[in-house]
Image (cartoon, rainbow, N blue to C red; front, side, top):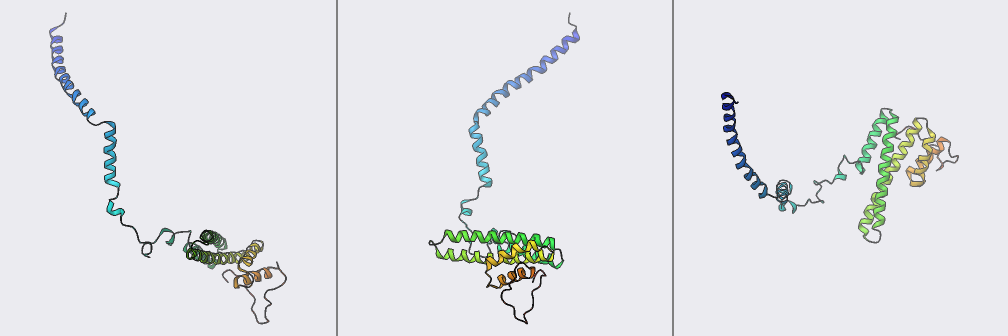
Length: 226
């Protein structure tokens, strides 16, 4: 037998459950209708449209192109912080010079080796471009060949300074191969080639001096930077 108290509780529960069930019955068709209103394809299209509106440049912006001949519009490899450039190699040479002044020959050798590699890569790249335009466009061929020569000069200068640093470190065995490379690259008749050969003579690697020194001609020094 169900007591009166139990009956009252059951009646109250039914009264509360009926409005809640009715609300669920009304909400379910609305949810079904909204889910049918936008298909998955439509949803993706809306996201793409919002993304395009917020990120894609306007047509007017696309029509504006930078003037590469304007020196104010600096291209990336022409900037001072680029390592693959003449300025980048010269910056390494300057750091090496400062290290030599501080007698930090280990750091100087590192910076000179890096500068030598940068200038060597640039020279090879410019030479390859010059060869590609040989017989096709003389203007580009001449410009790239001239850059190849200039960067090769810088490479040999860095190599010579590196050889002097090795001499200052009492490491002539490391200086000799570098000096021979300079003589081969510069030719003994050019100034840097003469200096490199003179260093080989002073180290005792060669016996015959070149050119024949005059009686009042000063001898070269093995100090870096000379």
